[in-house]
Image (cartoon, rainbow, N blue to C red; front, top):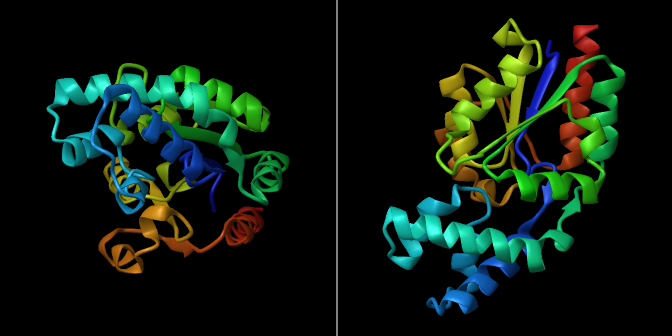
Length: 221
């Protein structure tokens, strides 16, 4: 059924909740920003950060870009070591590779953060291509298309995107790629949000995701 598997990073392959929140708190202290509540900080797990900087800190787009810069610096200092691969993800990626399929990563993170995270978590050897936000202006849809164009996919029906946020679902639909929603992601813990998106399946744990992928691989063979 599928030969090309595209994944988001945060909340999909790795549990980066503690990393993101620690980095946000350091950014707040560094820039003397108002201290958001834990509930508000958890809203940053999934959606594009700049949009949330504007919403919660009352900044404009130029200021949001500066906040993003300080956030990335904070992430390198206090966040990156806290990222953990979800149980079963390594095995899932290995299943995909052993079946002769391709794995790509589409993330709005930038190069330094992504490369170090993949190296520290051991994920780098399982990923055929990484599309990332190199200039701070790339859309998730463009990243998915970049993955498609660089992993040899000539038939969009053979590609699928896995993500934990509404932004991932919207981007997949625009790119005309099937989308699997990760119900275990922070952004989809409110299950009513799942009713608003186009999807081919919902998986509620990394183990369910592996089971789903194994079924698609089996069907393809």
